Length: 259
Image (cartoon, rainbow, N blue to C red):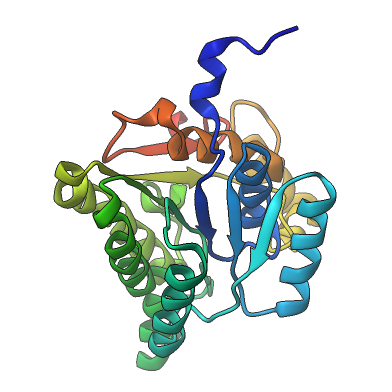
């Protein structure tokens, strides 16, 4: 059967996409999906072995991926990596900012250095990556800036203040960049995951009490499967979302609509 013509609006053939934190978890699922839609995906993280394994798995599935290891909080490493993108690919069409760190404990137990360190990774790096990506997108007159935020930017729990503040800041950044870069045909949007059964959450998922609490916190009464994040990313990266700008797509099984 021939592919319905409209589905070609979701294709990313010929596009170059950088996905940070894509060696595992939600970032890897997003990278796999973008590659499956035709993009050449640049895999980022600090664990080179994990990146090469991810690239091999994408290649085995018929996709195109290469490794771009750098620490998103290392200014020199970021500059060098974007210079490499420009020299090796000559373009960047999609940025998916996915890297994040979390340290669940009361604010009173944080040192100043710990607060600043988390904000550097969870918020400041997002602004820097968006700036550097836009510099490559502006000459072409198009691009997609996508930030993976969190439902923690909308709802809160005690003992998670720094992460929650950073994710709310990312949501504000998405709106601000939509206004700043929209006139240049560069859209800015976000994806807010809910409770996903990733490696990072394995201990909570496996805890009989906590795992059940978060599962029952959603109308669907289960944790999200990591691959369920991918559709939102492909949509926002694709021509099908050409007039979607400044919004957050919440992928949470409905958790944030419950009282």
